[in-house]
Image (cartoon, rainbow, N blue to C red; front, top):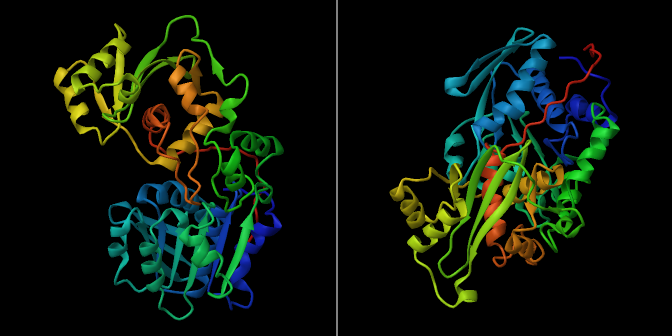
Length: 417
């Protein structure tokens, strides 16, 4: 792989361990696409190979899949280009890296939930690197840190900011000096591979607290409307003329709470929410049964060929009713609230997702859906039913894997080490 000249902050990240060596680790946070992840992984491997032989190291992400995509694939390309040999053992999640007569072992771990701490327990490590540390359980991070008992071991953390009261901000970033850690904050401008037009594009994708976090790199509290930009002119449209290439229905199911079903149509690469079924027992004065809600689902679908119906995974009885009728394929929704809100926000701003004016209850909820005032990342559990079905569709079908992948092709000059 070839590189342009590194920014001053990237050079500091690459070489901090070469200086007096007094810091026990490093924390890098800040904006998305700021170049911190690749530079940290290259620095981590370079430090490991310079300081240890026959050592064991841990490379941690939220999942093994994200570790491989975000770190391993680009990292192996880089380290091989600068002279290291790397042998990957995918079945055992191990990478052996050799160079200069030394060989070290790098173990890959996913810190998905509280039970993940048991995976790393009992190991003895020379160092550990956490990619997106703020997305991992505290128990996993602290268990992995406790494994670094070899003399000269160091800890490496990178993440994008979350809410100010997040445990990682309070216990690690705020206490970086106390823990003898170097702390660095990155901005998009610290990544010389990003053009100004690309930086401007990212700035347009986010608003509110997400803008402060992902663009400014701040640990910002959520406040106000979840989707404030949906009050702008032009964010709603008429149902487009002509046919649609595909149809999907997304469902947030409720008995006491409202049920909201959205009908989505694909036209020219854009998904339109063209119609809806919205039933509130409080508003209407009586509840509906699963079968009555299913009749509403069939009426919404009409004679269209529906690819699938995406349903709140907790609505087990309604999912069973849909399956029993045998007319629609049913898919349980992905239900990570904050990731889903971010994905909806991005898709709406990019124009990949459009809400039609015919969806009156959905439009009403966009104007009411607000963040909790408790300081934690959580929307209020009110006026959120159409918002949930929009999120289910986006996270489960539009985005697919739930992960965003960015590819940037650039002409770069080779750096000589």
